[in-house]
Image (tube, rainbow, N blue to C red; front, side):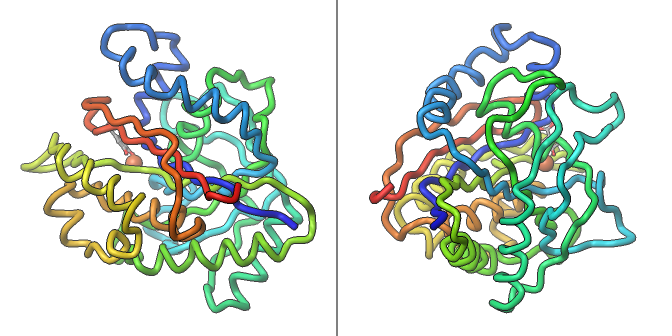
Amino acid sequence: MARITAGVGCSHVPAIGVAMDTKITDQPYWQPVFKGFEKSREWMKEKNPDVIFLVYNDHCTAFDASCIPTFALGAAAEFKPADEGWGPRPVPVVKNHQKMASHIAQSLVLDEFDITIMNEMEVDHGLTVPLSVMYGDMGPDDEWPALVIPLAVNVVQYPAPTGNRCYNLGKAIRKAVESYEEDLNVVIFGTGGMSHQLQYKRAGLINAEWDKRFLDLLTEDPVYASKIPHVEYLREAGSEGVEMVMWHVMRGALDDEVIEVHRHYHVPASNTAVGHIILENKAA
Ligand code: DHB
Ligand code: FE
């Protein structure tokens, strides 16, 4: 039987990917950002997941205003890094576990989560940056060490899903994974955030106190955290802070009580607070 052994929460700041691609990660500005991922890379080596179920958001790359799926599951054989204006990132193509993705699609829909199924999709920094920070430098001719099942969540255009809906989707994903017969070690990623606002009068907003409370709640009181309303993300974490609802999908797929094995929080990286957490199921 496949099982979800751990969850990773992780920012996806595009400039972090650029810093890695242009090899400037040891510059004083970036050094503390990457220092916090050293332990994570060790942990990834040790954990060595077969499959990463990666919850992320697309930024008007694969989707635009013409089509806005709330939850879109990647069912294609592979997903190429998208050109976001400066050419595709020089990182490996993302390979799917297509059979497991199809099983999860069926399980979710029969469980009344009516996801969109993507048989073709390119992936942007929302997906590639978390893989890069967790695995380290990988070139376009390398292979990511794990297969990746992407789940894109709409947090770009209101109405975005609630934290509670995301949390319950996490539970349905766990049920889907645990009903897949192959013996696979699955790690789930919830990505995006933390507090940031890229536009208008409050551009540059970062709220470290609120972010840290969010991380505390995520570990200790995930149900309470999942009930945080959209307006609180907007007010406290800025207009792009709502990306954090994706972390509740990850948390919902884990046990009620988890072990926090690592946390990293740093301000700033580009316009954003970088947040990262690793949570393990006790029985893992
Ligand atoms: C930044 C952060 C994001 O989450 C994003 O999608 C784009 C830009 C930033 O901090 O610059
Ligand atoms: Fe973003």
